[in-house]
Image 1 (cartoon, rainbow, N blue to C red):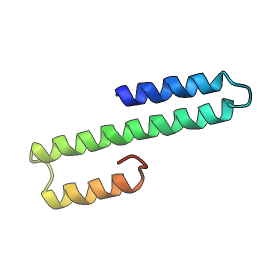
Image 2 (cartoon, rainbow, N blue to C red; image 1 turned 120 degrees about the horizontal axis):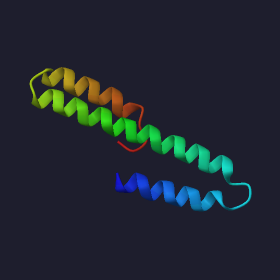
Image 3 (spheres, helix red, strand yellow; image 1 turned 135 degrees about the vertical axis):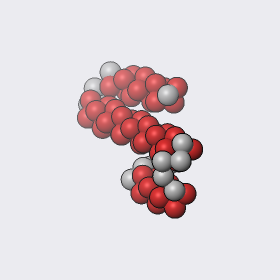
Image 4 (tube, helix red, strand yellow; image 1 turned 120 degrees about the vertical axis):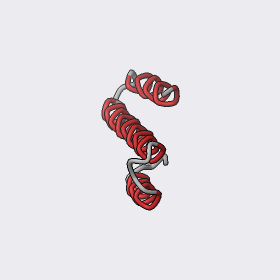
Length: 72
């Protein structure tokens, strides 16, 4: 969460420079996407710990989520 906040602050600072508005918008969208990815991974881990899904299903879904992420 703290890293996401830092990213947004940096992007907003860059947005104050002329011509960087598109960069800020793309960065904010990317940050929001990665935040959702983290939420999905957290929920998946909770389901696995609670016994709602098997280890194989957990690993399969985790791999799918990580494929679409630049961070994880």
